[in-house]
Length: 73
Image (cartoon, rainbow, N blue to C red; front, top):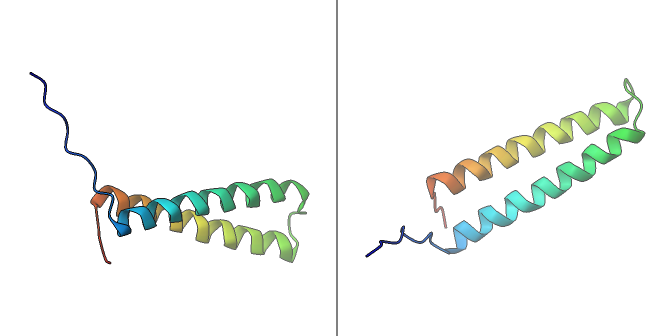
């Protein structure tokens, strides 16, 4: 007889964190692709770096929220 691991909850909060993680990752990939066309040292490049930093922090936060099963809603 085998036992199954407990199923992850499919609550609204869990789905929200998954969507936030997926969308932030997609936006970071698009932003990374745009860096091919930005010149280092320009204002656009700096704003791209700031945006990338914000997206990385968002991805890390969503990942931590998913792993900890935090349900604020």
